[in-house]
Length: 170
Image (cartoon, rainbow, N blue to C red; front, side, top):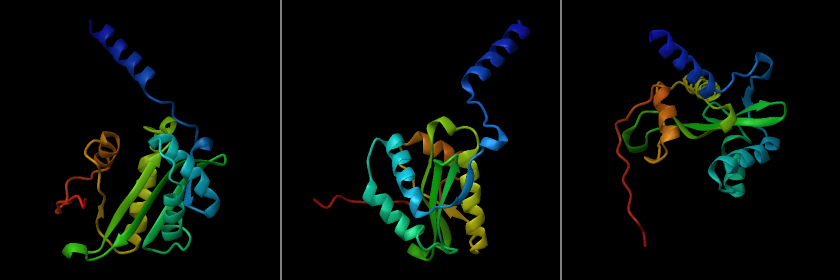
């Protein structure tokens, strides 16, 4: 009975885990360039179903065109294809908060998920935040976005000290 159960668990693991890329196939993480923006747009559209050209060009202008220690736009590229990206910034003193790293966007190609790429992107942006002198990272997550919420939780993130408030303006 125990052997059959163990064999069943092994079978489930083999069929549900995505294959790990070989070392020579692991995407490199680097600062985004203007030539990466179409790949970022395409990846985001593949995942979200929304074409947001102006948004991503604006994000690149703000966070990638003139990178510094506080504005970060990184991509994970493999064989000329963008497999992931992360965008963040060190922000200071909003609502009495000490300077903190903020992640605005993170995306990994679905076929590359659960292989450590998102974690590598997150670790890299956190390293950049640490180098900029901050000791915490924050983000906001829509409650229905369980995939990204689970990802951030798996990185050790938890509820922070602030509560978001909003109201409709119509």
